[in-house]
Amino acid sequence: MKTALTIENVSFAYGKKKALDDVSFSINTGECTLLLGPNGAGKSTLFSLITRLYDSREGHINLCGFDIKTQSRQALMRLGVVFQQTTLDIDLTVLQNLRYHAALHGMSRKQANLRIQEELERLTMYERRFEKVRQLNGGHKRRVEIARALLHKPALLLLDEPTVGLDVPSRQSIVEHLHQLSKDNQLAILWASHLMDEIYSEDRLLVLHQGQIKAQGSVNEVLDGTQSQNISDAFHQLTQQRVST
Amino acid sequence: MIGLHFWRVMWGITHRELLRFLKQKERFVSALVRPLIWLFVFAAGFRAALGLAIIPPYETYILYEVYIAPGLIGMIQLFNGMQSSLSMVYDREMGSMRILMVCPLPRWFLLVCKLMAGTVVSILQVYVFLVIAWFYDIQAPEIGYLLIFPALLLSGLMLGALGLLLSSFIKQLENFAGVMNFVIFPMFFMSTALYPLWKIKESSLLLYNLALYNPFSQAVELIRFAWYGQFNPHAFIYTLVAFIIFMFTAILGYNPSKGMMMRKGGR
Image (cartoon, rainbow over all chains, first blue to last red; front, side):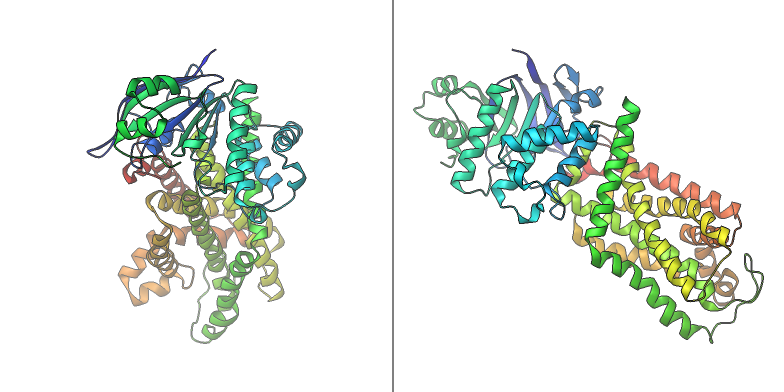
């Protein structure tokens, strides 16, 4: 098992307001790590730092052995992201959106077509490749975004609350698919969520609150550490808030 | 291999911008209607009111429509440059700018690609305008239609870079209306697009100076001379320097550790 992401003593502030305070953790390949935290905990800031929208002044972020600041090209090549908001161009077709992403990652047309077919077929969306994104429902748009994030075969997949606003069947199917992906492809996943039923017993947990890591480890380790019966109680104890079920 | 990656990214971004432009038919129509109204209505009405002396690059007395045409070409590029930046603010709000920003190539290159894509779209609009103007009897020597291309490239890049710079300052889409009022209109009216410099000087020395140093004036003059097969070195250097300054500042604005993104707290 290799380390896909290492965060070392990262702190970040907006002016005087500290958003992240000495955060350290690591994620291995094949692991699905759920990042839990109430609103304002620092999840979005953490994602912005990993995707290099901001630079961290304190601490280090390392992706598959590459420093995100000094070796950003090599690091970003190994990163796939699904943002909370839809980032597809709704006036373009599924295929046009995916080809655009493939071009951004330097793929040839042939290579892109092959990968697009593979990823869309896996999500049973290949038949719909010529449809405009505007015509797809929320769940299908999400599937396209997941396919897009995987086109260039990243080692780490970042998911920022990818199931927000989806109906229960769509959500379940995406949650299952992502867990399977992590296992089958040895993909490391960092997944910001606030929904309990997205957590599987073999997942790892990271609880972030007020910019600090309050707990990390396997589901059982977090439960033992907080002496709780379930994740919801553990989360409540760590943050004084309830997670949605 | 890395060179190929750069090329594919440039092509990918330009192709997406062209697709978006062609799908948004109303954008294409309004981009053309605006200068055409100025040409057919405003210029026709002004023809009698404004007498023009012979000034370079023209070798004879010209109609006001002929004088104003390069200014309207500039207008197309000015609006397009601002619209591209509008699309960047929109992209950032919608998050698709973030997809571009996580692309594994230097950020300055991604911004240059975005700029180039916007400029290609504006040049497309200008050539459609030139065809319509041709049928309206506003014609330049044939060689001018070729020579205008590099001038359009530079002026488009300069105006696009200005838009890019503004987009790095603007946090939300709503603020863009202010940019329209405070950037586009003053830039257009305080320039040589509508009146020659000597005419402006007759009415106000302050306006004359503002128009003289307005980079949009220089872009319009660059286009005017190139369209008539001539090279205006002063306008060229001025436009080029303005482009470099705008571009450099815009790149700083999008730099993750130094830029305005940081101060804004981002999204």
